[in-house]
Length: 258
Image (cartoon, rainbow, N blue to C red; front, side, top):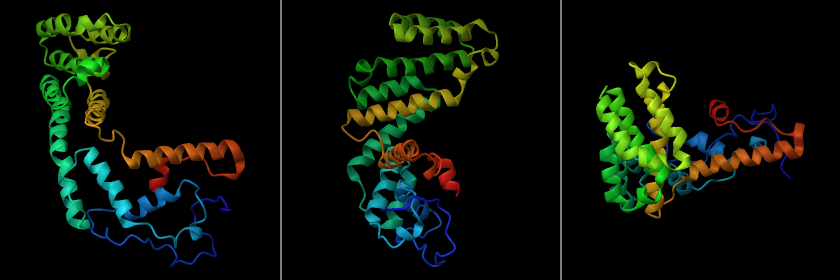
């Protein structure tokens, strides 16, 4: 039975025992080897001496990293990663990845209408079925009109595109928040100024990315995210069951900094 302990090496641990079994990620471009190995074993947070000699399949680690890069459309990094590891190029994903990257880049840059147009080409009926996502994308365009001080256009767009959706209870509060921006000569100073920020766009774009992947019957969540989610849940359960006998709840930030 594993003894639950912290990650610090005990005095009896050999300084040579912490050799990661992954050998293919030695280039400066990719510093994945130790964090990913630690992440896999962080679920139980056992004494390092109990797992340092356990071999981890390089292909499994590479697949985790590759899925994350493809999910987030980091094409240049995917190319470098393939060259560094010798992995087979995921050909069926690349064309789809390029199209997704184009779509959410447009949305992040404020060109939501073009992003909607390309989404409808890539994933027909997606936005028709996902009204919440469609409303959020339309709202990005409205916000961009307000930011550009095109108030007349913003009002007309709100009347023709947003108001019909405003009849849905879920969208009433959102619509009121967006309309608040119009009450200020300087929307950036309004109580709803966060709607103008890139931080507001980012979750919308991530939701769009996941929805497009799901529409194409591709995983909408990466194995890396699942590992972190599972690690967090296991650590929470251990805290509840064993109370003082386990480390504090899992924190990815603390984990990567240790």
